Image (cartoon, rainbow, N blue to C red; front, side, top):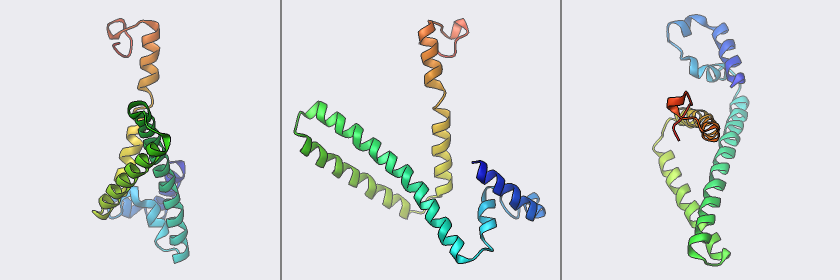
Length: 147
């Protein structure tokens, strides 16, 4: 995030009038800096952005597969090989759905922003709730959450 902030400052320093009059949008400042560069820089940036998104998707897929596999082993009591294949098929179904949604041309920047905001806002409540639960405090006692 610091990198994009610095890129925004540089883009604003290059053309403050356009950003002040909203001819250019501040949240696209990084791409404004990329525009005059050679095509090689565009390809390199595309590779880096794809790698960044792929690592996030990979983590999400691993999480889905592990939760699904664990639940299937506990409930179905079948062999791990069958559970592995069921998990793989479920993951293929999730990927097909994701590809179909991507074909509808959703704004990727907005989706990443929403995902980051959800992760950032869900980071603090669990420890705060656990702290209040351990101390026996409730909202009426000045605690953060009711237990």
